[in-house]
Length: 541
Image (cartoon, rainbow, N blue to C red; front, side, top):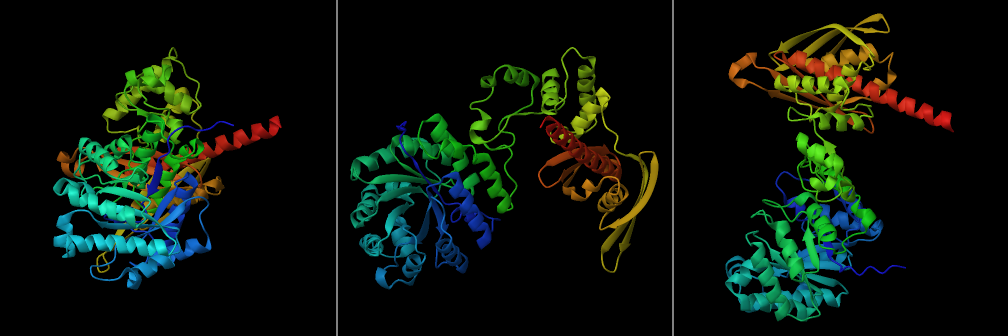
């Protein structure tokens, strides 16, 4: 049996508390439970669930987890120290903490004398008493304590002696961790290193130091890494860096940096493979678009666009990739655009399962057609389904599922109700048979999409499972006013796949028609390929 000698870094996730303080982010109890269970699956050791007693939602969240506990993670309740000149045992908010039933409690207290005198309007001595009384009371009730030293770095810079006193008080009262918080996010990495080093020298060798950083100076991840390298053994952060103002330290960057670059043990290797999927799951649940350019887990994190880059990566990924994408559950993407070279085309062909080589004259024709269409306003890097259809067209193997003979769209405006209704009529040929269908929608594109589906679904029942999941319009040359050329991007999907198609025209309806039609065609292509693969598997067995 192999013994893992890598030093342990304890990851503390505060997405469900600090992360939800992000402007525009709101979650239900069900959302919080789903995220907590996914973080548990990822192997996060500490998950801060919220402040029970501060709102009914958090109370119910902790009650739910008492009924159905997580598999391995410790759920942590969060609260402040008692109020000035009160007794911890009589504080209602601490009773709510106990009722949450967690083994661990995180208590935050004031480190900065400015906050004590100006914010709490009390004395420095009373603040120490608040820290001591709160922790001692919770310890007497059998709770284990993490002490978050709020505004630690600002407090230490302003009055180091008093700031250290607050830590010593928390340690003497029974805190097992003291977490140094850069609450305002204004500290830089070199300051973090020096101050963490000072704290470790000044405090008991048995106490464990944590770090909690905010991203107001865009250094939250760098600050957390600096703290760990100076001796901190707990890192607090959030998924995708969610948090108040500019956010918190992003665990999706911290975990791989700590584990893959610095050799610390955070989560199991097989759990690290789930990082990208977990990041996207959380962004989906909180209804925020994922950051496509986020390090490690973004869709573009390992995307290669320039022809020279693609050629080099194809020979040796180390030339332009700092880790293997699969280590964090991501994948390499070769992007197609007007900057592409032959290497991009060949790489995309392999992704699509298309046999193509450099000597084939069609390869150059595809590249030339790509550049020509991109100059007209098409964008294939975000519409790979349209590029695959273009490629198959050039190779002469684009399957024709149907042919559009024509369409009309009629719109009515009901001025009194300020609403519109649209009627689309389409003429489609399938297997040599013409079909004429009409359908209504709340807009011209919806009506056109509905009419197309109505015309085709009897021939291709799988179309009923296709969904138009996103629709984007961009005006390409706005200086020409209403005559401007329009680019339409349509994202379609079924129960397990998504694909994007593009259309460009001075007429927004024609551009939309192009993108919608190709979206349906590509969905049928995927279905056909899946049926062929299944038939081959049956034949081989």
